[in-house]
Length: 299
Image 1 (spheres, rainbow, N blue to C red):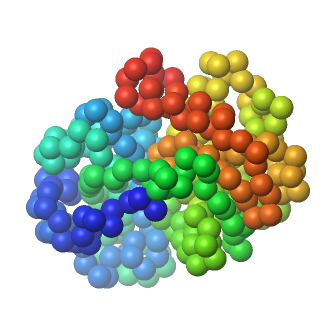
Image 2 (cartoon, rainbow, N blue to C red):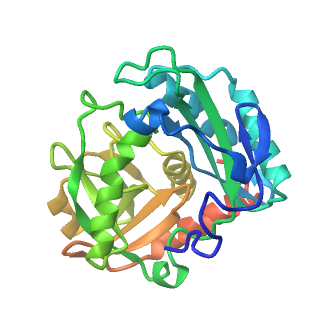
């Protein structure tokens, strides 16, 4: 993965992080070890990218952050507009033009126990240089996915519409398992055995010129997912949202992932299923690059 290997550990860098309303030096952005979120996963976050000095779909990300916190039972005292402004402040303070950004909100250390009590909400926003999520030399021909040993839970067992940190535990386990077996990522099924998503990205398949993608009823309806669907429709490509069973992958000609980090990434294979082409992924990736860099109107 082409991520952050050359920038050093995340707790020892130069720069500024926005923390509860003010910019603090990067190395001073600390929380206590008895913070509720560290023990009970009462934390939500966003991943967003800036291109040419503009944070793509910023307002949508800030709206989702507040909603994610609300779904976990705590309200952020900062408005969507204030979060937008703080993100822009972080980008400017660090002199970044292109960057990955991570707003994260959590319950504090006023109480310790399953019940959150009167814990206070906190918000931090960091930004760093991050190129392509997957190595471009590998991604150009498509990445290889394993089939994850863990499944996306039913929406009545977890707040699946929240970008909650706790929901990424099985993603971490699945990706680690996949990489240990020589794959680049993993496809997760849902509790019913249907195709769901990759560990941090939504998935699309191509059959006879149409796009097929799972209905997001137990995982996030990604902002990039919706953006790419709009780009496809503008090209006259039919987009079909439906239940997809694993055995159907044998009949698909192409597949790709979408996400803020992954952007648009072609897939070469998933488990035993091989795909013939990366043509549509490349086309939509070019469209996406044009969109985020302001060369075509916002979708």
